[in-house]
Amino acid sequence: MDKADEHIIDWILKKTERKSEREHWKVKKRAYSHEKRKIEIDKMIFLCVICKKVWSKVPHFIDEIRWRAYPKGNIPTYGKARKICPNCQKEKAC
Image (cartoon, rainbow, N blue to C red; front, side, top):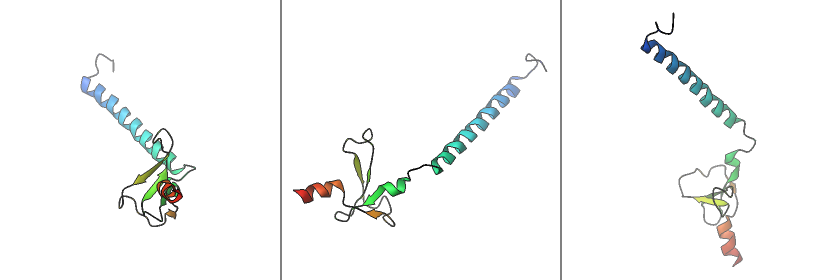
């Protein structure tokens, strides 16, 4: 079948089919690479023993103070390591 004989709908179907297949594999690859991370995010989240907030260390480009506290009830506290957050450490030092 020549390019001139090909109907426009057939051409569109071919193009969209390949694109959806490629995107399916990209998503699957991203999910697979996330499972193989060296650092587990869950091990970097802590529960403060004083203020009972969940907090984690974050890179400097995300937050300048290098840690972030999360609102109560957003992240489950079961199984989290207990550490004093930097905010409570400052108050305790004063």
